[in-house]
Each structure stands twice: as structure tokens, then as C-alpha cells.
Length: 595
Image (cartoon, rainbow, N blue to C red; front, side, top):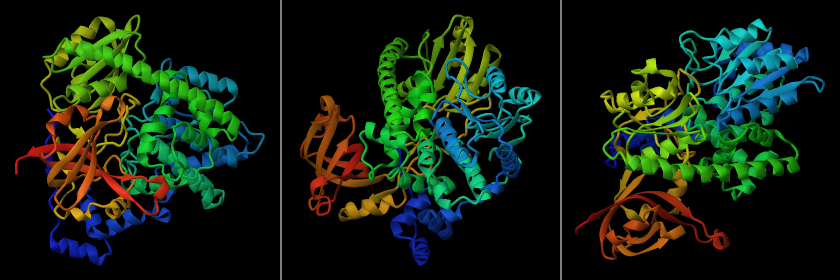
């Protein structure tokens, strides 16, 4: 059931000449054209990634109104509360805005933060929290990564004398909250040129506007880009346009960060400053930040990212590490359970599994993992006394949000998009939902752009759903077939990395080499789960790895000829790095051939 591969058309000589006249290398021109960046000017802008070319924050809708209200609050020493969300985007956006406001407020003024509990509150504003903030003296709430659909809650806050400024990136409903200001590029009346900023990106644009209004040095803006890079990659936002520029600069900042919490997190994850890439955020940093909200309280991660005390940072990072390890154990245990349940229903085109009080923070992760594994849509429900909360993930064959929409009458609440959704349902209606899904014949769910994240869970933020990423066909694309294999070298790897950071909408380039001979093979990694190969075309040799391909070793004996589909990775030699820089092939697919 694996998806087929196809190859992008190679550019014509005329096109290559046009791009060369603009100073664009041929490999860059081909790869950028494959990603929908087709004009010389757009290619140049992408490659240069200049901070001063990012859009003016004041061109974002309602930014001027928000700026004036915050300036008034700062001048009058009002009690301001930053109201965030419990995922990595919400936590980093809350931390970024809090750090910015700290530098602008007077020492006597109170700056507060509130991040709701995933387990007890759900995302977004809630009435109980508004009462709490009112009792503390809050007169201005600034949301980050939430609030766009909270019509009732904003009205309630307003009745309590609290102004609400919404900063968010989720699609707003037709009837929007009557907030003091609502900074959201997905508003139909917003003309801002960059729609795909995530929560931390919008928080950063507000910070830009504030810092510039108070004539703070540009260096202070740039210093916050480490948090932006973490949140943007964790949220799988498309890495094109402004996102690409800000995340590229943010990764540079992260590699030399002075944020004590990030430094502690980097050490705990075993990462080396100077070599941190987007994949390290996705696999190592973001899961630890997310573990706080999934397993206990997102404020642990927020406190880590906002403390200036290294000793405090060490304390918080240890707490996160314990939570992340617990999350990994529970995910594996639940994965084994639901996999067994799925095996009992091999002919069901949709797998629906429920259990009592399963950890709601990880059911989405497990649904996603199992869906990828069995190539079927998976719904996992955590059953409470009367109601169950569920997470759904889909592959080809079912548009999960359309399927849920068709039975909205039996759901308490739902939201999401074609491949990921969240919902709440009464326990006595679960079987009715199963019957509906098994009989559903609606539109197939499109695939989303591949992510660098290994454990990405799409957070369902509100009833109107999440930002829908750029969609592609079910065919996986190869960027280029190498005819001259001598070009597969470290210099080529470095040239390709000039297009980084890679992720959603700017996937890591994938190549193909044909007619390679297997010289030798061996197993590597824990329990020999990976397959290592030495390949040759007669003139050049390449080392490659098939991650989790150890079981395939017998299919590729010495002497076997193959076509290889791969991406390029550096082979680090710490002791001789300056003298010997090599690459290896991260093999995504091997195709046996006869020659």
C-alpha cells in the first residue's frame, strides 16, 4: 500500500539560462522550481533570506489597534495577562511575548501568564479562567495561538471589564469574537502577504511592532528568534516566505542561544551547539516541550523558556525529561494495545478503538503512528464516565473531518481537517459512530506536505479547525535523478543545505541514482533494526542506511543491482573534520533490478 514515486520534470535549457543570469545555481533553480518558487526574484529572495525584507508588522490587520492598547496598558501599569496554549507553538509564543513585555513594562507593573490544562480546560479561553484572571486584577488579556473562535468567552471578558487582544493563526469562524483587536492573517479582511505564520510567528510580529514603537535595538528582536524557530518547526508550519527567513535566522540564533532554558534543553537532549538543525527541534526539543502539556502542566515548559536563572532551568528541564520519558513509555504501551485491537478487525477500512481514561495527551500521537503503520484511518477514544474524547488521523481513503461533519448530530464537539481531527462524543453513541465511518463513502483525504517531525501531533485548536497546510498528491516526488554520480559529494550536500531549513512545503530534497551494485550489507542500530549498505556504480562508492530496514537485508545480497531513492546526510568525523568531509545516503527506497 506504499505510495508510488514520481520525478519532477527537469527544467529546460532556456529556463536554466534565465535563472543563471540572475545568479541562481542550476541545482537551486531546479529544487526551488519543484517547490513552486518559479521567478528569479522569488528564488533570490528565498536564498538571501534577509531580515529587513520581511513585511512590516503594522500591515497585519488590527496590529495598530493592538499596539496602541498595549502601549496604554504599559503606560498606566495595568495588569496584563498573556493567555497561551499547551502545545509547543502555544508555549513558545507565550514565552516570546512574555519576554518581550518584561523588557517594556515598569518594574511595579504585573505581568501574568495563563496556560489552560489540556486535560481539564481544553484549549482557548474559558469562563472559569476569565473569572480567575478578573479576581487577580487583569484588565488586558493578550492571547497567543488561540482565541479566534471564542465568541462567548471574549464577550464574557468584555462584560467583566477586561479587554482581549487575540493573536492567533487558526481559521476564524464566520462570526468572530468582538475582541479589542484580532491579529490573525486568516481573517478574510486581512491583506497581509504572509498567511502561514503560526502562533509564535504572530507573537513575534506583535513584538516587532512593540519594540519598534519603543525604539528598541533590532538586536533585541533577533534575540527572540530562537523561540520562534522552535515553535514554528514544532507546529509544522510551511517553511516558505517569511517563515523560511525567520526560521533560518532563528536556527542561527538557537545555535548560539543565551536563553538559559533552551541551553539546558539542548544539553539534556544531547545536542551540540553549532550543529543544531531543524530535525533536532522536531525530534528532540519539541517533544520535550510538548510533554509538559501532554502529561501534566504546560507551565513547566513555559517556566523553562522564560527563566533567566540557570539553576531554575536545570530544575525545569529535569522535570520535562521525566515527563517525556513517561510519555514515551505510555505511548509505546498504548500503541501495543491499539495495534492488537486493530489486528482483530483486519477488514475494517477504519479502525476505532476506545479505552477507559487513556491519556488524552498521547492518543493523537498513537492514532497518527498506527495510521501510518497500517495505512488506514484510526480513531482513538479516551472514555470517561459519560463522554469520550477522541483523536482521529487519516491516510488516503477517508477525509476524516468530512466524515465527522456528516454525523455532527451525534457529536458534542469536533474540529480539524482532512487528515487530523479531534472530537467529543457520548459513550452510548460510540458504536453508532463506528457504523457511520464504516459506511462512509466520501472524498478521500489528500496527503499533506511531509514534515521533518517524527512525532508530530496536529493540535485541534477549536471547532473551526487548524491551519490546513499545502496539499500534494498521493505520489511522492523525486527532485532529480543523478546521471553523473560524481556529483553526489559533500560539496553538493552543502549547496543543497543553502535551501534549509527544510520541513513542510520545503521538504528535504530527494534524489535517485540508478544501476547501483550492492558491494556489502550489514545491520546496525538497536537490535539490528537499520540496514547499512555499500553501493557502487563501478567508479564511485557510497555508504547508505535504510532506517528500520534491517529485516530487508536478505533481499539485497552482495551483487544485487538496485535503484536507490535517497536524501543526503553528512558523515561527521570529529577528529578530522577539516580534512575529511563525507556524505552518506539516507535511503528511502531500494528497488531491485536486473542488469
